[in-house]
View 1 (cartoon, rainbow over the protein chains, first blue to last red):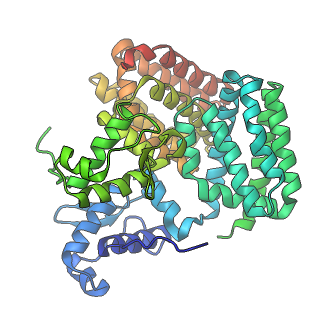
View 2 (view 1 turned 180 degrees about the horizontal axis):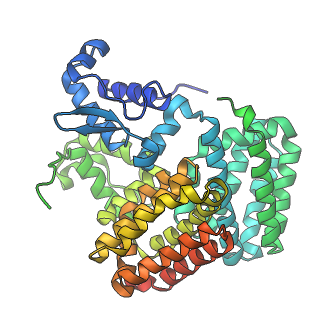
Length: 234
Length: 234
């Protein structure tokens, strides 16, 4: 994989990550009060300045609430969180997600993809759609599951761009790691050939402007994945 | 509104914001090469260190590509961007969005809300849904458009939480500013009473497990908003 960039991580970032992980893992419960800053400072071996800056960052992320003169409390991040929280959740465990998160992702992905396919059908003629052919060929020629997953991701990302909706490609790209992981699992079980065939079938449905079939195919794949949730661990 | 927090902004952040705005406004075109760092440094009156750090940040956000020994080029952020880019776009102009962005948001919101309503119907009984009543009452009693918009936002955010999907409330919350702005426009034109009535109708449909009607109502509201795109400026 070559030499990866070395990125310096500040003490504040390390502090934020550790508290984040404790909240996401449930070690710190929602509503729980954090120990006072001086105690955290001793226990975690970082300065009070680092802790103050870290807590402000954690509040911005929707993980804690700082109540003046009362202390710092763990928030229900699923209620108070925003896109930044989502990014933090995905970063947790290097992108691995829990069962409920994978299920939520598949549900959301299904809804987004069906919107995407509808818009693609409305806005693109056969000539435009033909541009997807080389990506399809590259899926067929993939030498392993990871390569196939990467190319399937590109195929759907290209569709998101063709939809003309400016949010869809950005949202889709944000889940690149998770998406490629799920496609690669699918591929390991069913093979590159099968993965190519289902994308070819989707492509044909789009070429025929058969939006009902395209959507039905998407639902089916998400249902298969949802039934397989047991495979994704936790 | 009281005294707002004063937040120190670093030179790097200011540099990033300025370049971001130039790209989002189209002043810097996709594919265009930025001037060399020493020229930027003179023109913008910041150090080379600030520029290096800023360019790395801009690359992370999907706005530029740094090609070794060739220079820095403006990326197609709609293609290379992620959730972080989306946040940057929304921050641009203090949350105001361009017509195509509002349209994209409405399309995406429609798809998400329909998923949300389906999940809410599946997972909640009448007793659970009754918890929405006080929020509905508070919409009815709102004294102005902004207050009504804020409460309508809470109503939908609560629905997103009740869906059991962990991504939906986070995504919805991320668009709080934009969502409240659009609801408040709706309210200014149609009045608090009308806004209350449509939310009551949606609530009734959910209580009757009439998912088709709930979805139809959502589509209708989004269609009205899409037809009104001219009102949102740019």
